[in-house]
Amino acid sequence: MVKLSAQLAEEGRHPELVKAIARAAAAGSIREDLRAALASLRLVEKMQGEASRESVRDMSDETTVTGALFTQAIILYARATFTTGKRPGLLGESGLSEEDRATHDEVKLLRNSAIGHFGRGDDLQDGPLVREAVILSFTRGQKQLGVYTVRAQHKAQLSARLCHLIEVRLRQIADRQDALFDTVHSLFSQAVQQDAKLGPSLPQFQFDIEAFCASPDAAQRLYAQLEAGQIEDMDYVVSIPKHQP
Image (cartoon, rainbow, N blue to C red; front, side, top):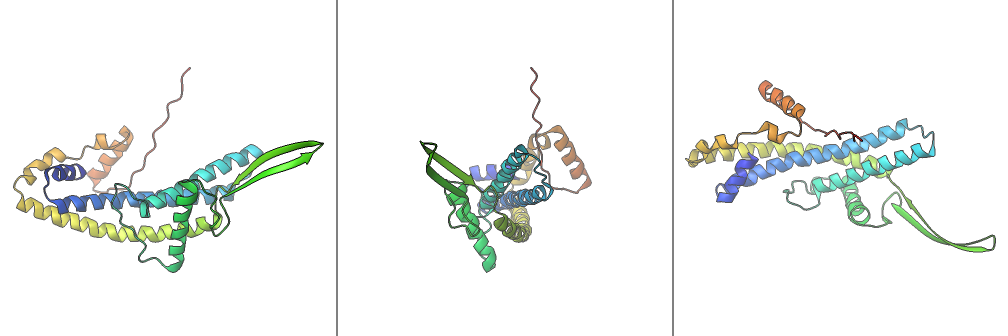
């Protein structure tokens, strides 16, 4: 129905239906952002629980991956809740407890002042994200000037609180999504009855599974789900071909 809504918007027809379809699509992608953010934080917990740190290199690799996952979680939560863009916003701050709102505000501060743009994060509850030092030292008759930077790749206390907040947000978006689907169905039924051209035009907007999916395997899986009448969430990764010398 996304292609249908684009055509209707271009022609200036059924604006309420167009808006409802956009909001339903937004609910789906917001949910996926939140799920991916939560999965990233859970993976950090798992990695740290299983870490052996047998070498400096192992520790460095773990730090890099942990930082990437934590940063992704912050960005995805922000994108799902408060950053602006082309997607309609569906999750405000109403309905959050005082503790959850404090966590939300801290994530906002972290994203806007320390991740999306450079900042030390001095106001974070469990300490700054970045510490910097410019050191002038005198050793062995020499004067040396050095710059040292330490970055906390992961904030454990914030991560735990954010996991809880994301679970709250997932329940909120699930409640919104059901209502949005009902609205789309109702407005679409009305539009078909009122617009004699709409019904006959629908075959040209048939869902193209091959074009939608990123791989033949994903397309085959979706075909099977549609035939069975059981649609499940589908994520995918694209394999990187090995370089042949």
